[in-house]
Length: 128
Image 1: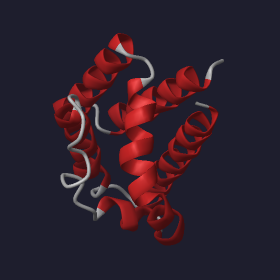
Image 2 (image 1 turned 90 degrees about the vertical axis):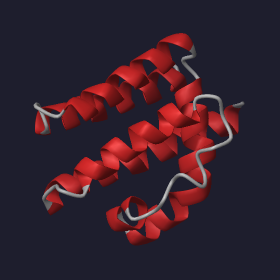
Image 3 (image 1 turned 180 degrees about the vertical axis):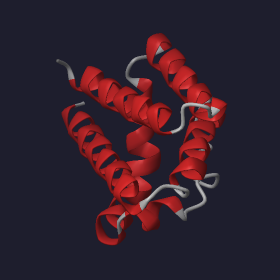
């Protein structure tokens, strides 16, 4: 499996888990729809955007401070340099809004997904 496929699969799994936790929430389904569209149109775009917007700006904080260090940030100042920035920002804000309402064990799961996605994006970036 390629690194791009691995990233998109992991991100899709993450969104599926969010849909399972919030089955009635239309916003998370929208986030999944947006991700599927972007990754279908340009499979490498999500991993590139993740690296340049999340990994570069927040990975050190995320590693040091855990879940809260990431989900208390305002992403609008960072996610603004791409044509699909509004779509990516929308996904991040949907996840952020829902994640803040979760139990600590579910927040830990999200944290692990975020760390994994960051590591995968770093591996991809180092190979290109």
